Length: 189
Picture 1 (spheres, helix red, strand yellow):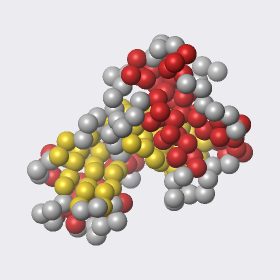
Picture 2 (picture 1 turned 60 degrees about the vertical axis):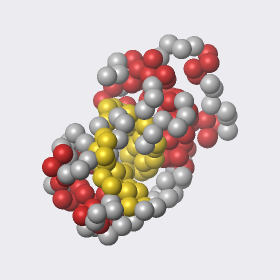
Picture 3 (picture 1 turned 30 degrees about the vertical axis):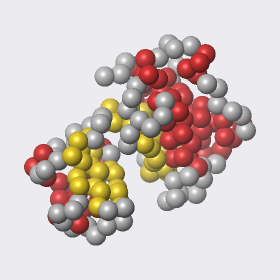
Picture 4 (picture 1 turned 90 degrees about the horizontal axis):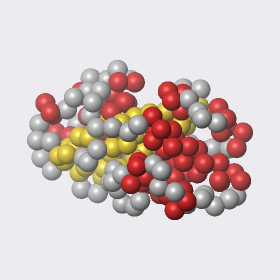
């Protein structure tokens, strides 16, 4: 569990990363300045979700900790703002009305039965051959999906047919996420 201070620092880093694009500045290496935040030492995957007036505006992340945590947060934030193929790049004018939400992921666990899935607690990863799709735990809750709809939508996200989760060579993983946002925590600025 992250402290409120750590969550705020992670959100601040995500926002600084996005702002640095518009200012054409290099993001400062925060951890080298001072190691005040334990969260920058995490070994977790992370997703950054952007919403504008409650509508999805971008969501990109890392399932696994392939680099330093702070690098993952910064890159996911920039990617959500500028590289989510579902949306045009975020403009500087939109930034003030864009909400940042961060999901810090647990390590994915392969499941043998869909009975192991707990809606509202688990996110899903569906993998079949070269195709893979991920939906965060909060997605099923936000859309009021049942387990079957959640599985089907994760397959669709992977570029598979909705019922491919039933095929023998399909792997299903669950994970949990600690989710927090700017509106939930406020700002220290």
